[in-house]
Length: 142
Picture 1 (tube, rainbow, N blue to C red):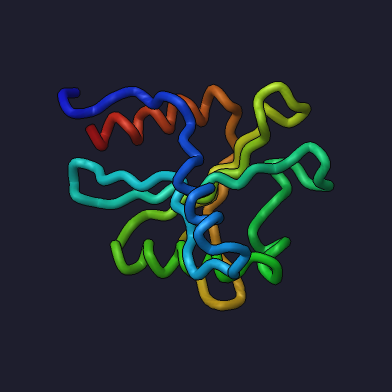
Picture 2: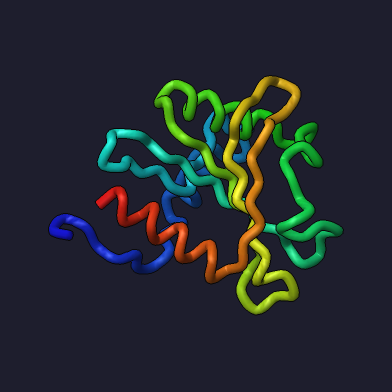
């Protein structure tokens, strides 16, 4: 599509710049992993949640409820923005390619939320299944 491009080099320089400028202060912001708008005008927000190999959980067994006490501000902020935009919010558990659990992806659509946690509709996928679904979502937004 004209006006669009393929993804290129990962640019974390903006994150590094904000970190430098905050000089160790606690942040009031959250970073969005991905936001897109489909042809119906609906926003879709994706938050990618890496399950590191050193953790006791894998992408299928991890869930924000397990560590809500540590990171609830991030999830509440994501949910508030999704609500304000009337957006669909997807949380995506994944593991890095080349690791034991690389072929486990958990797609969680946030259905409800409050200060105590989120209720999600969970779909277990393989990496190729998620890629196909994700590409369809992307295509719907071009």
